[in-house]
Length: 468
Image 1 (cartoon, rainbow, N blue to C red):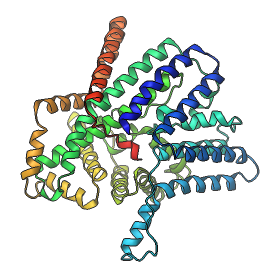
Image 2 (cartoon, rainbow, N blue to C red; image 1 turned 180 degrees about the vertical axis):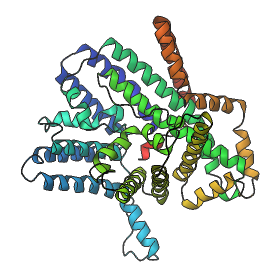
Image 3 (cartoon, rainbow, N blue to C red; image 1 turned 45 degrees about the vertical axis):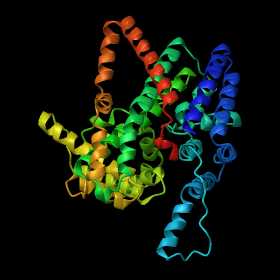
Image 4 (cartoon, rainbow, N blue to C red; image 1 turned 90 degrees about the vertical axis):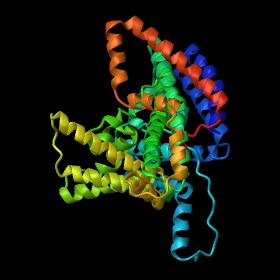
């Protein structure tokens, strides 16, 4: 499905881009992008396109009604309806399955097998942010339903984010320009994002998927660490790569979206990590959940409770599994601990210790995030610290991923997860702007060629955030 979506996008994108440049009327551009977005989603989800449209129309009506006298009541209904839709399609089967297992198969009916609509977590949060923004008076209600439809369904970020808050783009929907710099910067961002996904994340996924498929009880330390590190790199380059593609495509159409990642693996604390990781989701929960709950303004106990609520919701947002809930609790607990006192320091040694601590916390958390069950996660974590079982098959598999090709990609991934490349590029652009631009464009074209060759020769192309 993912490969066919790429193929469809490769066909759709040039046509839409050329028409968007050729006709400067914003109404035409909005209509063009709306049609393209609905076609793109319908190509992957021909049935659930109806659900997407229902969600948009529902929130369009809520936006018109929420400004009247009973605004709080309308807002409450909007929250219940949006979360209710999300619950039915994402969590109902999990909840019923849990009840059924606790009662020993006591449910008098079979558990429905509801397929998860692609991108429902993302577009539900975007639609809800629109209603909340209107209720707060941060923006005017959108009278043109097609403009709201474009905001929710815009194809570059529809299926895997980033989550764009309405008040960040409402003016851009009404009026925007597409400059030569937008096209150049957008193409560069898109190509480098595609390279992250195809050339790095997919390679790391081969190792992570192969090793997590092995029983955790039979893993040795080497296999467990290779599996954990491979997944840490896979999820970053997979998701940040998609975000780069979305931001790049948006820029090519005249939209300037907020950043979604800021080199999270150079963080020196868990708090710093969450300032840099999936920024759009973190800021959404901060703005629409944490602050309305009172934030850190109502005493220490309430602050701790609010942080736990936010991170429990963050975990659950990612999926209907106990592993995601515990992953949220894991990060929430470390944030609470850090909140008791982790002052800034200029000591290089202490900074390195904090950096190692943060990477270890994040890595162990992602083992829990990746595992199918809590038991599997526990077995992998035990193996990482030398308490694993027999390491025969897992060891052989791990060694096969220490071949020169995988080590080369691993080295590129480690360097690419820091801000070194960005600093070098910025320095080159300051000193020799023309040479820097030529180098960047040449590199982007080379990356695009390598990506298309890889896509044509290899059908293995997992996309982590499609299932969220």
